[in-house]
Image (tube, rainbow, N blue to C red; front, side, top):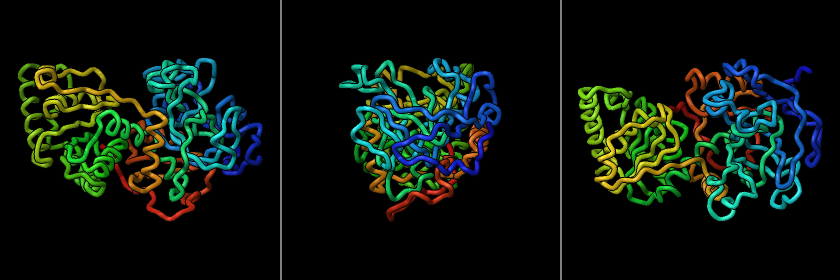
Length: 416
């Protein structure tokens, strides 16, 4: 049955009741490929909430690269994570309205306006109750390693995933920050124990992670220098609180490609040294912390230039995950490498309070209609996007959902 896109913003059911079906952008294993082919609009049965689960009417959704991977079926099929389901509804960022709650849910009720964080884990895992849900064997990223994500009229989540929606943000603004901001928060605040006066180097400072890392440094009283790809993006991160910026194009020779000869490595090492001097000139000394998510190309430089007893914290590897670096600069100068992955519910709630207080602001590039979900992911796939994209679902136009005064999202073209 064809889906009437003109009716996506309308729901013929009151809070507490679910309609029988919903419009959803669905990926199926037999059509893995380019996002514009893999994402197809289907009419899907609306799921019922289980114990400690909530069904949320999605008002807006955020676009992340993880569902480009889901569309491609790379590096692994998402159906490896949820093999019992023959479809995948992606989307790991959402804002919306609680519509129906399952047994055991007491904190939330139909009609509550919420933001969704994307970490799921089983309540039965002991790690959830005293260590960290991120350590649980059941831990999954909702909307990627699970189905029932935000590219549908309704999504299914665990009750612990819900956060109060900041009242001064529109629906699309509230859907634009969760995955990247909460990741940056855990990296700096919990993993690195960021303190006032510390010096921080941020790779890709104008990207989805970097804009929040920069704001967290400013808020904490730390000095930061960001690596960016243009002077315009450098000015943006200075606006967000960076002490200064470095144009990465001036230091292309420091990037690790892999397979360098001894002579080439000597030249690369010299460029990394030169880059380190530029960082020290801006910060007044070597960084205490290096905020890493690039991986292969930058990691040798990160380990080299962070100060003795300093920390390199990493949450990803966009240039490659096989890392090759001179380990002598690690052990002889007693530096630390810290891995970090998303955030737990406590961290997400504490980070969200800073959004509610307007101490941290989302950064949004473009808002697109529900009919353009496949196109939005294709923009990411082809590297033609210029920042965070939000998708309107239950909201019929931008600006809806704002019920209080306050600064909204910063509208900007961003990127590493």
